[in-house]
Length: 184
Image (tube, rainbow, N blue to C red; front, side, top):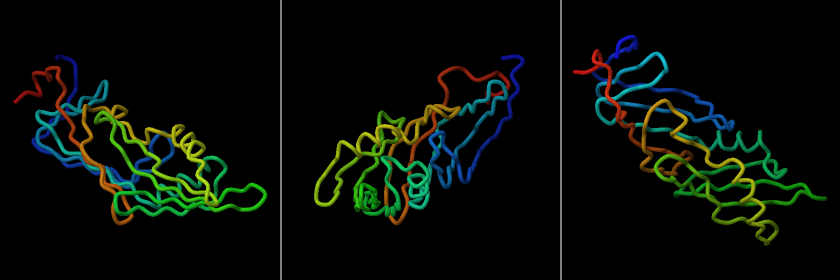
């Protein structure tokens, strides 16, 4: 297409550090690697000749910081541990006294596009006000949405282990034709 300015690559690797999402959560690193790519200036987009890999690291410290900043449900003093496929959250709730709260969450990919935090269990002084905590999660979900990026893609897996979540996926070539100058 005449008039479109592109920057063409035979191969690419890009790493983006400390990416701040619109909800306030920071992703430690996003990595993209693949073969031929074409960056289009206006409107900004990345056109790929074949699928590229995308990976993102979300650290337990960043989830803890996010929860501390947003203070969902008036909770405070968050401690987050990510291991064995789960996210363990301890906090306190101020009623008349400080009451300990513990929750166990998992991460789920929805339709290959969005990452959700799902509540598995919650304990407050032996009780389980799951609906209260679920309401707070509903307000921040999805925590990541691939459709917010200027590329087509599909999330394929999420692993939680050793203090971080590793999100993996593929960026897909656009279905439309690339500009003649970008074709090989």
